[in-house]
Image 1 (tube, rainbow, N blue to C red):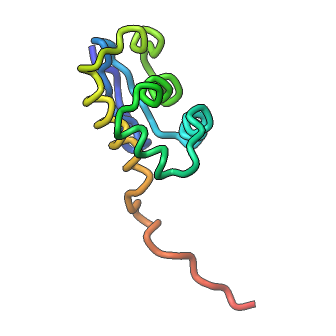
Image 2: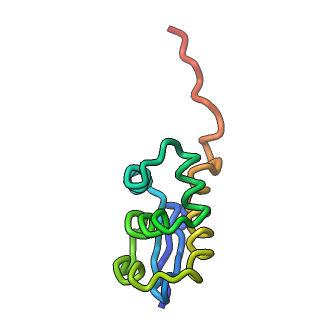
Length: 112
């Protein structure tokens, strides 16, 4: 049975080794992945996740999973799962770059 996904929060469904997961690119999770991988920039992190580097994929599953058995998923991770991982990571990261209603304009300058 697939896990419930809250798209408004940026959650994305991911199946790894037959295990259903829900991931989200939270700031804490991204910082943890970036630190573990010693990324120097957001671009570096994005390239490593979208390029499905093995260490990056394992770290992201562990640190970005918000629901599901991430330990079991990492244990069952196979090369055939990497396309789904890359797609899910890209979708989760894209959530941060979407124009949310009310966030497309700068705040007005207040004369002082």
